[in-house]
Image (cartoon, rainbow, N blue to C red; front, side):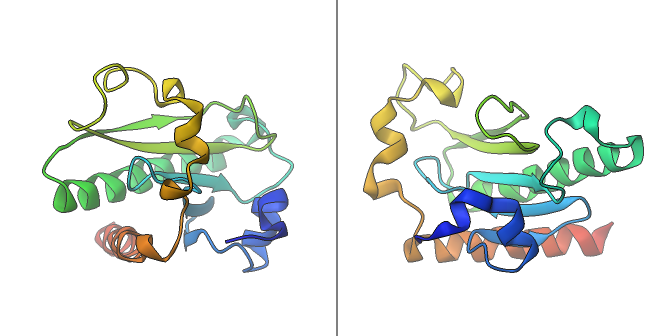
Amino acid sequence: MTGDWRRDRIGTALRGENPTVLRRLTSGFAVIGDVQFLPGYSVLLVDEPDVQRLSDLPRAKRLSFLSDMDRLGEAVERVCRRLDPAFRRVNLEILGNTDPFLHAHVWPRFEWEPTDVVGAPVWLYPRERWSDERFRLGPQHDVLRDAISGELDRLRSAA
């Protein structure tokens, strides 16, 4: 997974060129995270590249984005609970401190995490976790990708 798509995640998603896209949702794109040291990590990208914060959206679209975040969170939770008995919970975060576009992080959390970070924000994991090739998104995550995508489809049809 290399290429220019990382420089324009939303534009490439809109053009069908972002390889991390799981599903198109109402307000944006559910994507699987570039790193998977917490298997199932996903992100909701807004579908308007110039939108930087939740409050930039009209109220209806804002609520749609939050609903999509909930749906992606539930899909990740269901899949992680099914695949790993040590699954604990999902953390949902809208931060916006680094990337200049609205997005929401969906972090699954597990009992097997190191004790010094299991109860802390994911951002306190050592930097090497974020760049370690062992955790880089790749074909080894296809089962996880397919499971989250399938769960998103089930949740859509149940709505």
